[in-house]
Amino acid sequence: MIAIHACKMNKYNTKKYILTKGLDEYFLGVHKAWKFTILFFKEVFKRPFHFREVINQSFEIGLKSLALISLTGFIVGIVFTKQSRPSLENFGATSWLPSLVGIAIVRALGPLVTALICAGKVGSGIGAELGSMKVTEQIDAMEVSAINPFKYLVVTRVIATTITIPVLALYCSFIGLYGSYINVHFEEIISFTSFYQNAFKSISFLDIFSSVSKSVVYGFTIGIVGTYKGFNATLGTRGVGKAANQAVVLAMFLIFIEEIIIVQIANWIRYF
Image (cartoon, rainbow, N blue to C red; front, side, top):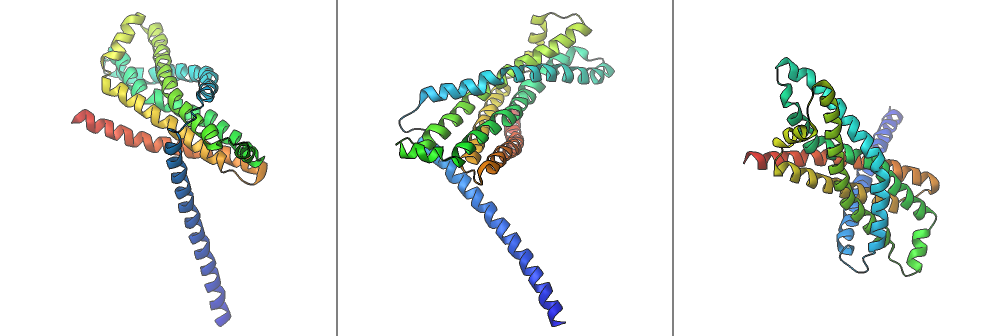
């Protein structure tokens, strides 16, 4: 009996140790991420500013994502319009379709779709790139060469994502509205000008402001998560893949959380 009791106690202590260790690692990771973010805000206002690298990263993020954003936004506009039409036809309100699509795409779908695509494409790319530099000791070599690797690698990429993703989100919204126009035009004859006038009739300045604000937050999140995971990669080539995967998953999770919070704040402002 004593041996059985001792065995049960050992199993209990082992489970408790594993749980405690997991919680310790989680809160340690949160603390490191917080310090990483604070360091970014300290370094972003210090010289040198590396404008050329910011432009290069903006080109990599923006122009090379343009084709995928265009295709996705166009398809989202068509699909959302086709799915919304039957419900409005039941109430004889198909004339409201441009306004409905405009509100949905500008307020939510444009920024959210752009952020999710960039989280998968840009976030994983940044995590893998910096992760490979970390495990091959290129970052250490930059420190030896009197170059601040955090300033050159992290700050420039976070600024680029924060600037570029709002531009891509607005572009995605307009492409989505164009896809919606194509669908509406084939169902019922309507001019391009009339469609966009009806679409923007129900869109206020607050809608555009909240859309741009969300995109800025999403861009910052993608940049800071991707650089953090890549900058702290370990375990060789295996760690590079892990950093890229974690960058995508964590960025998408935070984007959904931020979407809920920002929408709630915008609704409070709208109603008050």
